[in-house]
Length: 129
Image (tube, rainbow, N blue to C red):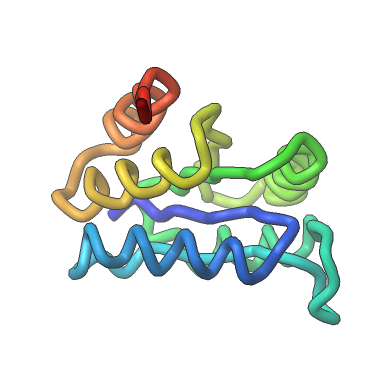
């Protein structure tokens, strides 16, 4: 199963996105959050992201979604910190909410990592109005 990590500067935002995705992919258990700092303040921490990636890893890869540029930089550092470990983690350039939901649905039906990423990236083209 492909795992998913939600990286947000806010723990509440990350948990809210996880809740939404879990509603759409109810049997999926691969969602992990890395939101906020250890003390509950706003920010992102590469070590917390590493921990979330390790929890999300079930052997088929982990896709990572981020909310803002510095969150993406923290995710990149986290992936660099995993060098030498047998974890295939990739950051997805997709909207954090829509991308996570689509990725969770794809992962829940057993799609491979490449397909999960491909479908999540398509959410960049979603129109809301």
